[in-house]
Length: 478
Image (cartoon, helix red, strand yellow):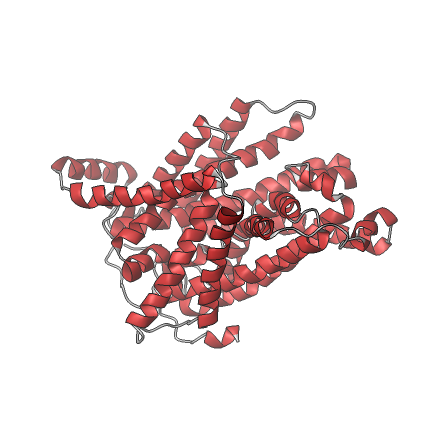
């Protein structure tokens, strides 16, 4: 028994589109515009630049998933290229950031679903958390049914998501085309606002790139993709430009209806936009946003469980996390993620805590690129069905350094110190893991009990080798 290669090009595109177009396009416009000093031209330019940077980084990461076509490919890649300690460090970061992001998404979903029923007052916190927990566990059960079930669920949810985004985009185009003064005036004065500083631009990029997060989902499930050497690069090149065009059009639509001051004064830009366009249909946007985040959250749980699965196979997590159920899904890993996220939902309000994961994400991406260069030097003859151009790799490293160092140098805060303390405390945990890792009989008994409880069994040994894709796709990025 092992994970099935059940995801083809079509379902791969759907998964990538669903996980990329999550909550970001509904919340990031506020941050991008704020750090662009309310300069509309700079703001739209940053959205377009974020698309280019995302494409460069995603294509660079794709080499990992096609060279080592296995679930949790980034983790395995770091272990092979930079060693076990760096791989454990990435695991340490993801052990916290994945449940944190999932819990935050659950709370956002419950807020958007409940708030329309409480128009004159805030929704009760207990009710929001109960609905968030119900949504979380429902998606956990869905993931336990296997990757193909998740793919079919995304095929349905993408219809709602596309309907909402296309409605917002087309409405903005129509309003501008009509030529009403209040809709086009702010575009005529797009260059009148002051220009932001370097640190502000870096902050604006971080806000915009958050909306493009999730592009590594296909690399994380490379072990379940048919012909990954061909389908992963093709999906990235097909989906990401489409998402970029939609994002720019949606932002133009926001600006056609709302002033920059109105956008930065609200946490739910799309709801405020709908309130101006068709006030009586505000619940439609709330439902559409919730559906978008649900599909994004479902893919996040899928990616996180594959990381736990691979780390268990490599001996850095208990063996039980790599065991599969009858649907070829790592049920115990999924359950662990859901439990961690549930504790976070119950214990705190996480909407403001998600910013701490941004630094860690770009530290990891920088490490991936360094590992990519090292492996090319150490193993130049390693078969690579897809090989990204070297300038893309160097560009990804430069992007990571810019986004990490610029805000720290220009406007240092104590939050960055906390972030680095958290990241490097993982090295201490790795030292404890190596030096105190002893085998106890009681662990075997617990594993047996859990194996019977979840009805799971160990997977067959997977091929550590190379991607099954035969076609070389270096030319597609020319």
